[in-house]
Image: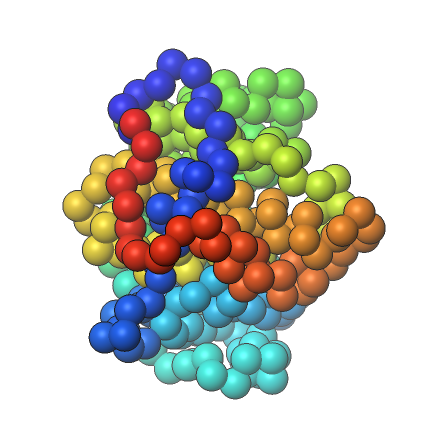
Length: 292
C-alpha cells in the first residue's frame, strides 16, 4: 500500500480481499476467537451490540468477559457466546464504558488485555489507556473523543477543530499515538503511523444513531480475530482491516435503512447479507493482498 500522499478511497474492490471465507478444514478456533471486554452497569447494551456485530461478521467464537448484567444480556441474545476466560486471538475493549466511573478491577483487566500483545480495538472508555497497548492497535474515536485523547497527551485541540479537518487530525493522531486511527464521521478516515491514509464514504445520514459505533467496533474486532496471523506478517493489514470494517458498516447501514430510519440492532442484523453481497463477484478464497 505504501505511503500515499492523498487519501485512498476504500471501496468494495479493496475490501473484498479482507473478508476471510471459511474453508472445509476450518473450525471455530482457526476462524478466530475474539475476546471482548465492553459494557458497564450504565451501558450494558453496548456489549450486546458489539458481540452481535462480531458474531455476524464471521468470527469463530466470541469470548465475552464483562459485568454480570451485561453478560446476562449478551447470553440472552447470543447463547453461543463463551463467558469464561481462555485463549483469544484479538481483543475488543472499551465500548459502553466511561473512564470516569471505571473501577480498579475493570481498569486492571483492560490493562492486562492491552499488554497481551494481540491485535486490539480500543473504543470509548479505554482510549485513555491506549499507552498500555503492546500489540497492533486500532483506536475508534469520534471527534470529541479524539480531542479529549490528544488533549490529555498535551496537544490541546477542540472537537470543532477536528471536525473542520478530520483527515489531517486522523493522520496527526496516528503519528503522535503510534497506533492506527479510525476517526468516525460522515466520512471515516483511517490512518496508520506508517503513513497509510484510507477513507470510506457513502454511509447514510441515518447511521447517526445510538449504538452504531458499538456495531462498528464489533465488526472490526471480528476482522482482527479472523486475520490475526496476517496482521503478524503484513504491516498494511491493520489499516486495511479497519477501512474494511468501516465500509461493511456503511454498506450494512444502507441495506438496513433503504432510505428510512434504522437502529443499531437493525445495522448488526444486516451485516451477513452485506458480506455475502460483497463476496458475490468473486469465487471465494482467503486474504488477497491489498492494492498498492
